[in-house]
Image (cartoon, rainbow, N blue to C red; front, top):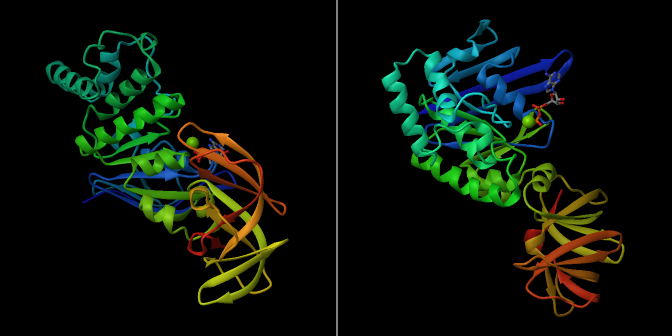
Length: 351
Ligand SMILES: Nc1ncnc2c1ncn2[C@@H]1O[C@H](COP(=O)(O)OP(=O)(O)O)[C@@H](O)[C@H]1O
Ligand SMILES: [Mg+2]
């Protein structure tokens, strides 16, 4: 069952077009991430769905009801869209207790005080906050405040929950734990969620599907594995994962493969764009696909190892190849100097 459907949505601030025809769907129990660089329109799309920004074209349906239709000049206000919202800043009321923060939406809806108590207590329990109802926001850690913001969004059981960078105020270590916890909660409660993030690892870990926005348009959408392994464009390839980029000239095209040449090197890759002989092109290869090789061979080049950096669980090597820098991972420190590295043909994408 489709919980949220956005069709050909356009939105502008003055003359400045921000959303340029976005269409997407969210099914029951599904988590979709809106991923994209800063300024690509993620927050604007979320706010338009919530009814906090006015698009001028397209339509939005929530749980089978049309809440916006540009052609019919139909626009339901935010409070009638019944969505659970979690803002980046949490936006908790500082002078209300945790209990009252979570209860607020139910009060607005004139839910009885008995029912409010039951619902708030159950939401707090679901989020591991059962013992904190009487505290004020400033008496909570950042992670706990974030849980209160989520409890407040979930308490009236909305058909869709919208979250804008829900983890971005947490520090790196807490963030990784919170991501696992949030994914588990979403699965357990069978939530349908649209989650904004600019972090590709977070999008991949948390969601069933990713929509990658580029300048107000969806550049590509798919499962995390699809987006990672089969990017359609250079933009998607660059955005997903840690990459090496090698600029060169295409010297030969053969059966879907392209040969890329640069000063002192020549490599075969998969032709992923519209590469033609003589054209300038960019080769993209993920860091984890590059490896140090014992000697010369197919798709191997001689490069200068500049340094090995210890990352804890592995080492990272930095190479110079002509005027490009390349990085790779391995299990031990390697002494600086000339060495051969292999960029397997199927892992080198030529755009
Ligand atoms: N209220 C506003 N008035 C004018 N421009 C805005 C407003 N809000 C956002 N923008 C612009 O819209 C673009 C998209 O913003 P936003 O949706 O916040 O991006 P993201 O969340 O992907 O970083 C940006 O260029 C931003 O400057
Ligand atoms: Mg934003």
